[in-house]
Image (tube, rainbow, N blue to C red):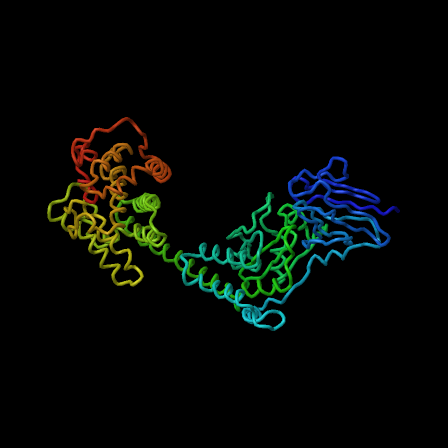
Length: 535
């Protein structure tokens, strides 16, 4: 059998192309060469691959950007090559394939260059010492310590993961990184991509990380360095590594003393030096160091989710007593969240809107049904009692420390910009800003909601409600909040259509508003006692 060599393109425009010879393959930009590469990083006569007495060799022809074998630039003279080696002409990479039994490459399981046990304790030790038991260099130690700093100084789980991953990509000089976390408490939790980061520039391809490698590392519970590509059908990872231009991959286990929580995946391209075993130990130390922070962030998120569910149940308790408010809190929360996002509130303030708005009417629990469910207009005395739902709600929440930041929403969402609202008659900037946001959303929903106590009384069209909100800027509402609400008009209408399928979301021509409460006064029948009015 004749000895032949085949070079198969694995990067850029040459991916999938083949060149084969029994003796010589010359690469460059010249049309007369066997391998013609139309790439600016390739010289006219770049390199040649030749059969020698002991196998195949590659020789650089004094190219400008160099020739590389497995990420290492070769010098003068011939460099032996073996099956599955990555040969790189400038930035164009090919993989070597031969039928020569004397130059067979490593068996398929040599895809694993190095592996390391991934106990939590061993990972912690690697924070201070490398694999040779030498103290880590200052820059490496600083990177590891900074990773722990992120947990104290970041808002939320997603931001924590992004910061950790960007640090890992930078410190380990990766072209790309991913964090994949386990979800579910069963014996086989699902692995879900939670963060992506790019270092040197992501090449074309649909694979950002290798799912097969990630699942294998998580299942085996060890951190692994993967090297040259192969065609192992059992692993079925070649496609993802090829399409993702991954020549060297680190998959390290994220774990705590209690459980495995996920995998940190880092890769380097064909034109970077491959990861080393020292890199594996550094990445493993980083993984051990940040895993406790990730687990804590997950627990905090679950606690917040539970807290939000509790709030939702409390809000539903109010709606069960008051037919008018059916779905009201959900809609007001959606509108207020849209407005807060448009006004670019910080994440912590946006979180307070999401937590506090569902409870803005919680004080109605303390209002007698005779007043709360009265179909006609309230007397002056009854209206004064109804107004107490703001202070009653604040009193209910004041007994819970965690609820303190949302009390201003509950107490002050009926204050008016001109100072004639209740309960504290605050004016202008004296009104807490979050309460001003909820006030607009609350009044808009009051105007557009149906009122079941009066058969046939429909909520006003969206256009009429928007016109009334605009009319009351600087009187009832903060002008900045009004401008923001009008700017998200389309989003609000879309939310109305979703949450109130029977509502009138038509957008007719201009609506004439003749008085501060005209949008509500066009129906002469009395409003229910609990209906919100803008006047």
